Image (spheres, rainbow, N blue to C red):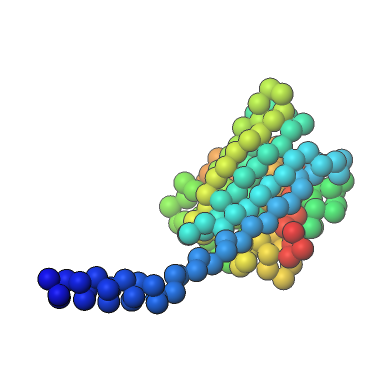
Length: 175
């Protein structure tokens, strides 16, 4: 009986003296989604996950149908009238091929398609295991989430037949 009381007391003291493991705060960044006219049409929020990043897209005033989403290398959407070319190409640090259905792998910047409803709204949430907020979205020149006019066929090089860029959200260290 004395042994069990001693263990209970010792175990309780040890449990109280071990500091709780503090969870590291998860990174989060939000960017305004603008259309080709430069008008804000929604937001994109990136939230760090245990492995990778969760992206939440909420937008309106889009043409009905499926649209490709890609993460581009530079956080610059200021050339909206010229088709968001300043955002560069897809984030692709390993020189992989484009598309989830490509047997040679896919790029870090590849994301699933989203659907704009008849009223022009999109509400989507997706996970990218390879995309990292600090390494890809908020690096020295940021990154941009770009929406295209067509869906991505997930295999055609270099952008899956996605067509022109119709919306862009710039991520930079300030957001």
